[in-house]
Image 1 (cartoon, helix red, strand yellow):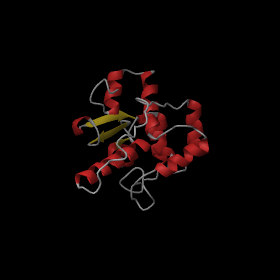
Image 2 (cartoon, rainbow, N blue to C red):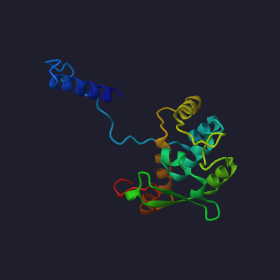
Image 3 (tube, rainbow, N blue to C red):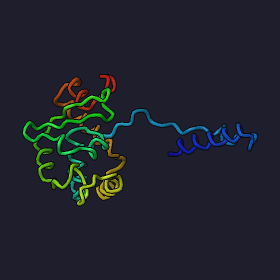
Image 4 (cartoon, rainbow, N blue to C red):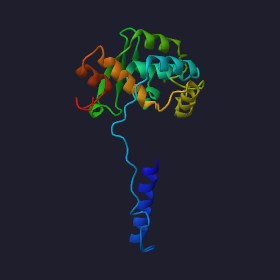
Length: 188
């Protein structure tokens, strides 16, 4: 956050110089904070259990979906019932940040199938308010659950990392690449 604010201030002063409102950029010499490369955080099974226990009723199936599919938050919140195939136990995800906008298929395990079966089918979207409108954001609810669970340094995207790490214990990297929607094996 601080690095973003420093970059913003530097840009503001550079524009001000260009427009001749100031002659000097006082932020020019300010150095950015060093950021850790490729921060990966994976939940332990115990942390997962505690987190799920602290999730609000509407949040729990969303977290279960993330932990069992590796889907991105926006993919989950955009998920429609049309994309969920209970008979074949598959979810079809597409058009998001996936390979060239193609569709990809994600298998559903029994935990995910059970969680989705318990979600009330109110509207087109799997995860929605009682009026059928999809959730716009679940950040606050997630952060509150994390705080109540006492789990340090966890973001929603880390649920994707957790899925991928656990999948590698039983699957191959090429299949994981396709499930996650990565363009290259290096990303995976």
